[in-house]
Length: 497
Image 1 (cartoon, rainbow, N blue to C red):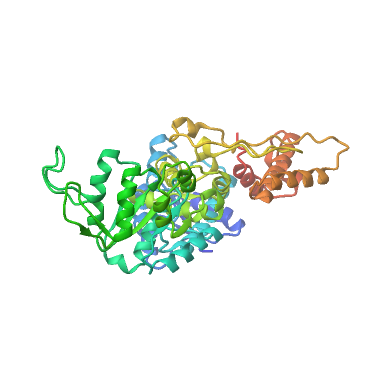
Image 2 (image 1 turned 30 degrees about the vertical axis):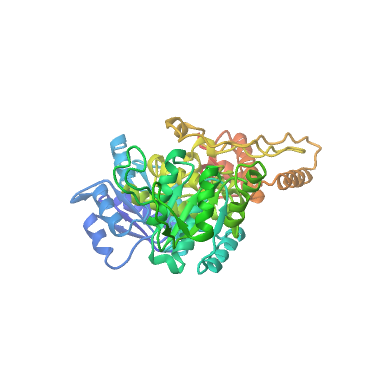
């Protein structure tokens, strides 16, 4: 681990932090002014930087802005004796990890710095694993199957039907098929057949001649012509009207089509990739979709799994979307805590990858600190856990609502927790825990060990604090842990008052 850098013109502050951090096992380097810090960056870089906000010859906000340009992922903690809202907002908007108001409690300061170190180390590992990450991410076995299929199909001209729920990334798969195909030098043209009015869709697909209908004052090229030599992606093909299905079948069969109002056949050299979230077999049975067109499209089918079936992909996707949202909005990228990722991995995401992307955009704007904690997540994403008891069923499904309002940030400081069971004095608590673990696993609750460990730690720490009337140091002694440990646990478990 790299050293912690402390910059403050007050020698006593530097001394106190040096001793406290060294006692916690951290290497420390101190500076008395911003100029020396900037010079030191030419040779090395710290794990975390702690800077005063007002110093002779410069201030912490300006120093923060200069550092963010060359070291955007470095956690910076701002210290200020002016604990006003403007200073806090300026430091956080500038990309600070957090800020300390002077005078500060040394133990809390060390704990905050330790959290910054932990996040910095996790972020370094995540950045190493995600350098040049593509938009189509996935380590889950189901997604690996999709990637292998893309590799096999990319050099083929065969028509592909992509199925999957809305928001699962069907267009990204279509783009990947095009990108790795011999047609990659040609255009990729996408059209959502459900988003275009029925009476305009034919013209959109095939174009029209001048005077073909009222308002057609000029000749217009359709999407098939625009995609010539490349790939045409027909999204939501299940919503295409029956009469247009007949025209599409003719194009796929003989490779020719006519513009609306036209008399000359146009030869098509386009690969067609279709996608739908609907059950086309059922549509065929109900007479809503032509059976011959279905078989023509369904030469090769790719099923894209919903996000709830690949929870292991949520962490890399979240980091990717946070980076991209920050770039689009021109702000510093937020980092996300391990606890927050656990919450997201338990959420069903009915809107799939698109919903996760929208959530990351919301967090980029609304999360109050540079590191996203569980309490910063929208309330509808923090579902209640599965009921903690024998015979309990799964937690009720939490539906995704519109973007949360300001009330979401005022939600409870901790994740909503299921009630702990009432344990009778004569009960064998180890057997009880085993029963609860079995119940959670049967209900499909992910991360059962993490789930139970958090419950256990919260219960034990609560008991110790109740016994000592809230005195943390005494509670830590009774539990046999350090005072920094109990402070960190209280914050991680959302037990702060």
